[in-house]
Image 1 (cartoon, rainbow, N blue to C red):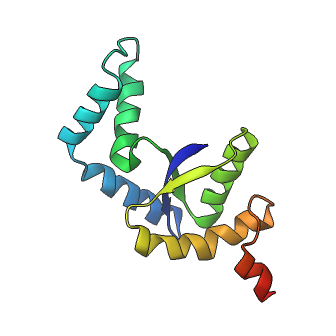
Image 2: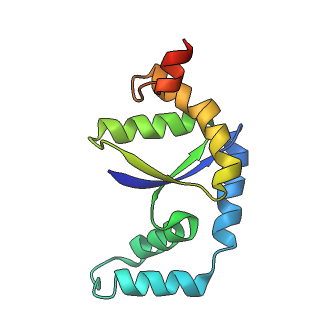
Length: 126
């Protein structure tokens, strides 16, 4: 299992712009605290690796960023499955606003690729 932050929009540019906006609005003090707590003794980490982690914490508490169109996001999930991950906990900036789009656009793609089974409600409706 892993954690992923999802930035899914109709176009790749929209998704990347939204991701960048969220990262730019981050609470730097909070990120400093998280990085200092989690990596206090990680003196061997290269600066660029810590900078990348800081961005991931700004964008979704360190989760793997899935950024792009529904197809891009489905591709990223498929790559994670191929790498051996058995499940993903998703984070969204605004769950109530973003989850319906994810459910409508990404979930059917995952089901078509054999990465998701239909729910009982979907099976019963068919």
